[in-house]
Length: 166
Image (cartoon, rainbow, N blue to C red; front, side, top):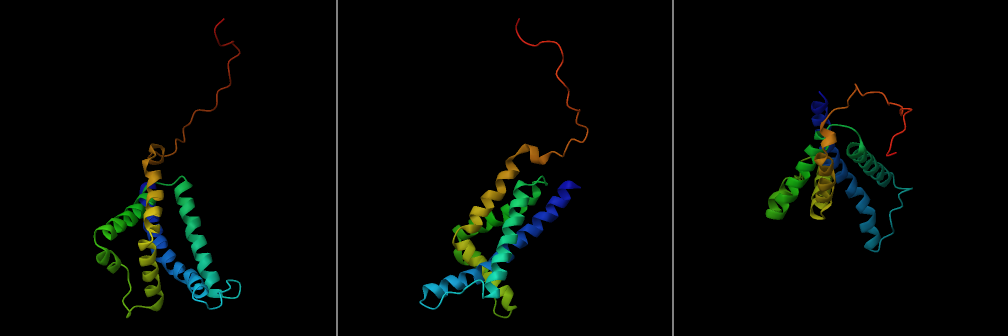
């Protein structure tokens, strides 16, 4: 049951890391591009879209940290790591095919297209490869695959007999 819930959590984490971070990265980058282009910089305190995007990226980072550091099934990190690393390998082998996997069709909703462009940007800059490797590390730890041992023996006090070489 623990690994099934880990699989479900892995699927949710994949969606959060690809679509959520992709969508949020476009609004965050919008402020940087306008400042670099000579226009007035986007002030995140006054621009609610930038605030929401920064908050979405913070939530994605928080969930990423909880899954990596928490005591959950390693499938919760294995599923998104394989998706991100496989997408990166496809990008290395065939750039056009990898970029075509992101939803950027203009007939889709504008938020989905924005998320797709953000996914392409994060993929091209290597952020997905970095996150994929970080998510794969917990899979290599054998202690993550075994469940908690509820029948642990209580802590034994030291005996009164002296120990050592006398």
